[in-house]
Image 1 (tube, rainbow, N blue to C red):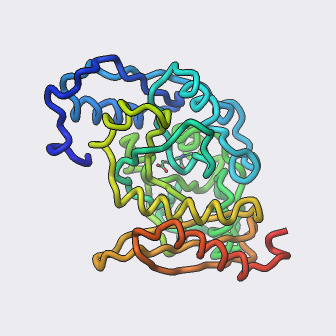
Image 2 (cartoon, rainbow, N blue to C red; image 1 turned 135 degrees about the vertical axis):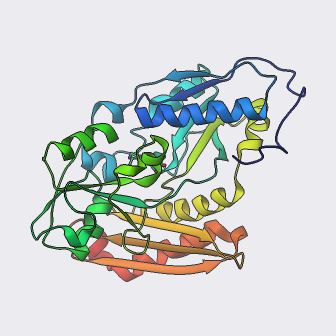
Length: 319
Ligand SMILES: NCc1[nH]cc(CCC(=O)O)c1CC(=O)O
């Protein structure tokens, strides 16, 4: 965790009010909230343990792929943000992948935890890798991004919508409803289930979703106590990468309702490298952009990638 030693705030926390952490109730969301609870406790030993408040979101009730991937913004965040604004929680824990690019007025994401592995895991019922899947094999996925990239490489595969949380999906795979599924490795790791992955797809073969593997902490923008309290948990390299990826997403949405993927990293040379793509859901077309720049110009890098992808794709693609 970032700032494990430097961030410890011994005796400096005079305001001992209990911090209330808002989260969705899925096993993954709860695991993430517990990570944040533990990190706050480690950085602020004098504080009483933070309390976890479970909030049901629209996305937990309906899991229609069209809504989740392209139509519905904030399906997994709206009710939690309402609780923040109403003052019934103090900090919201989000998978940044599920957070819309526009936050409501009065709220801010001030803290990004160090990013977990952003790659996607492939899970086969029999066999290990894509090459082991016979022609016509059925893949369960609710993600148009994964579907598009998979079909681009393997047009013979059949992708069917796959609902439910990680455990539900693994159950359907085991029951033989599909031959394989794809899940974020980050989620599997946080659930202690990384061993179910039969193959980890490199970002070059399956570009991750914007901000995949990153957890963001959202607070009331005016809440200086929480802002200070969360500082030891923040990871700047993660924030820079997520800024570039989300700027790319922001530049594409509104003009384009299509699968989007983006992944940014800071190299050993200190430069920020961004790979981004848009594709047709059936994989029949795919446009990719790769560029690098200064970390301080992360947002501009993301916007430039979006502009380039839009011009590569042309108006018909974006219609
Ligand atoms: N859309 C659900 C979701 N949101 C974030 C993660 C994974 C954890 C992460 O990206 O940090 C998942 C599950 C998945 O895609 O397999």
